[in-house]
Image (cartoon, rainbow, N blue to C red):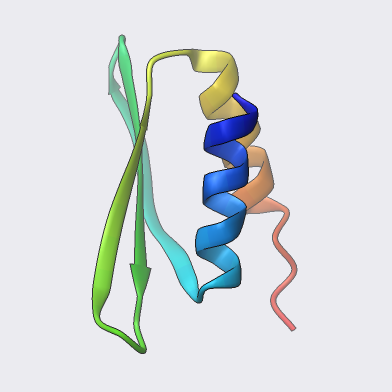
Amino acid sequence: MNDKLNHLKKLYQDGYRCIYYDSTNQNTFSVYLKNFEMERSEVVELQDSTEFDELRSYIDGFNFR
C-alpha cells in the first residue's frame, strides 16, 4: 500500500487533484485525478478495500490552502 499512497501524495505535490473516486466493482477501486494546469489526468486503481479506504481518507483530509 505504501507505494500507492506515496504515488498519490506525489501526484498531489505535482498539482493533481481528485475529481472522482468510486468502488462500483467489488474487486477494483478507482481514484481519478487531474492536473488542471497541465491538462493531464491519472487513474490510481486498487484491488484491496483497506488500501482504497486509506487513499480516500488521505484525499478527504487534504487541506486546501
